[in-house]
Length: 130
Image (tube, rainbow, N blue to C red; front, side):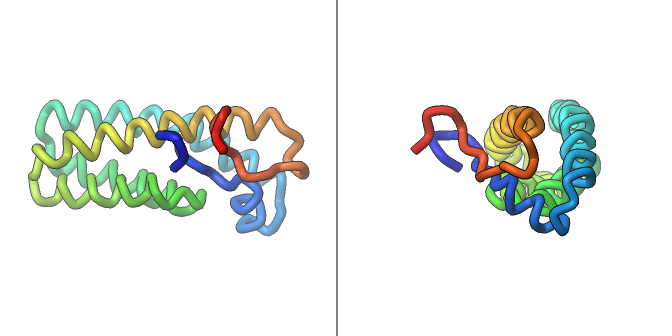
């Protein structure tokens, strides 16, 4: 994470997919569609103190983030999954804020990546990051 924003190496994600630009775009578009639903589900589960839903949704998000190579955000999802499993809603609240910020930043970065020509991808950093 740089300056409070998620660092996502889109070129590495493409490489992990064997350089298949079509598959890369499809996976990114699926994440762009599903991630907001995951966030909404987590927000609701936390508000209702539904530990099973928190654990399940965080686990799903952790897997997706790991697959995309966003390790920092995946760690936050893993910590939220553990908090849900343990019913630790006090810790979950703080972790949730970090995870939500990570995913929102990642979504912005992914939108930018889809606007670029995929073969020219470089690591995606937030605007103004050094």
